[in-house]
Every structure is written in C-alpha cells, then in structure tokens.
Image 1 (cartoon, rainbow, N blue to C red):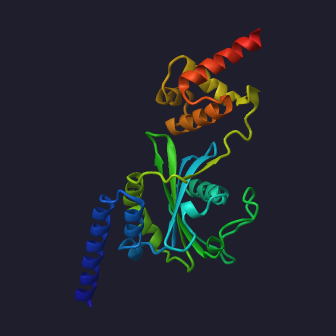
Image 2 (image 1 turned 30 degrees about the vertical axis):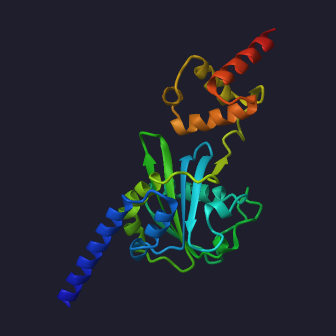
Image 3 (image 1 turned 30 degrees about the horizontal axis):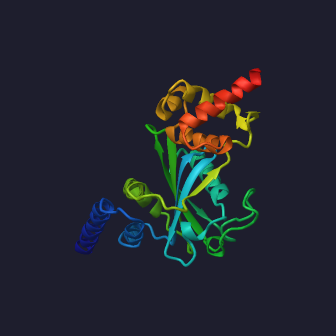
Length: 262
C-alpha cells in the first residue's frame, strides 16, 4: 500500500512538473488549448475556462473564453456578454479574502443576471459547477480572474490545485496574443457625469494630464488607477472626439475649451 501511494505521489509530481514546464512553451491560442486539455485536466478538470482581466471596480474588463466545446470560444460568442457573471464571481472572490472557491449551480449557470438580457450560450447555461480564483497585479494595478466551468460537480480538492497551478495558467495566457475578436466589457462611464463634448468628468481629467505631456503610466500613478484603465479611457476619448492619436485629441480638446470660453 505504501509503495503504491509513493508511486502515485511521484507520478503526480511528474505531472505537475510537465504542466509547469509546458506552460512556458505556450505562444499561440492553439497551443494554449492543447496545454489546457493535457495534464492540467488531471488536476483541474474543466470544459470551459474564462480568463478575465482589467479594472473590475470601474467595469473595464477584457475576457477570453477557451473551450473545446462547439461554439464556446471567444470568437464564437460575439454579442453575448458574460461580464455580469464574471463580476459577480469577482465580488464573491474579494469577499472571501481572495481565496479560491467552488460554486455548484443546481439549475445551471444563472442567465437572468442584469445586463445579459437573459442570453448565455446554452452550453454555458448547462454548466453545473465553477471553480474560481484570481491574481491581484499590484504593479499593473489591475486584477485577473480565472473561472473554470464543468458540467459535473468539481471535487473540493481542485480548489487547492487551482491555487497552486494558477501562476502557470496566468503565465501561459500572458504569452498569447489577443484575438481580433477579444471581448471587452466597458461599464465605467455608466455613473460618471458627462461634462464636455460627450466626455465624462474622469475623461476630462485624463485629457488635462495628456495635454500636460504625461504618459499613460504617469497618469495612472497620479489618479491612482491602472495604466490599463487609462488606455481604455483614452480609446473611448478618441472615439468621442473622432481622432486617432493623442496629438489630435489634445488639439480637438483645446479647441473645444477655447470655444466654450468664447
């Protein structure tokens, strides 16, 4: 019995080392998919992985959905917003001290969450359990949340396994280029007052610093938000001002201010 247990332990250690080593070789989405379906499944069995990152407090969230199930991938789910589900799981993760946790959905993943118009892919609605953990990026000042979904109940022990493997999952995903159809949920301006040329008070504040020559990183430091958040604000500002770069945005913004004073 002891020998068998020792053999199993050695085999588990070898599997873990393979998962860690192979994560470093992931460079493309197809390689990522193959890696997720390999030895990782032994430790954390799942059918769908949702990776979400950004500024959850402001609602600026990117997410990628990875699965071998038909029609359940980022490129297949255009127009279907899973961010309400992701944000509810993120809030729960924070309340639980940023520790991994499992959720069992007796009736399937809820799809009547406000903001989803009751539409989630039928396969996602059919999932019966979720395993959730995240990483707080203190240097970039944004968060990353990882959600695995399974049509069966996930064993309790998988929570600890996910905690141990998450740095490798995070590393693998950071090495993969964003897909052209990468989803972004932007709810940051819903409660921010529009004050000038369609810009919100936060966007005007950012443009003031851009006009003074500050970089995205510097603006983030000044306003105590992530560089990621500043970049997303600027992309929205460019669309509102109908410009394509910072110089044009500064010129258009300055002209607007002169007209307002006149």
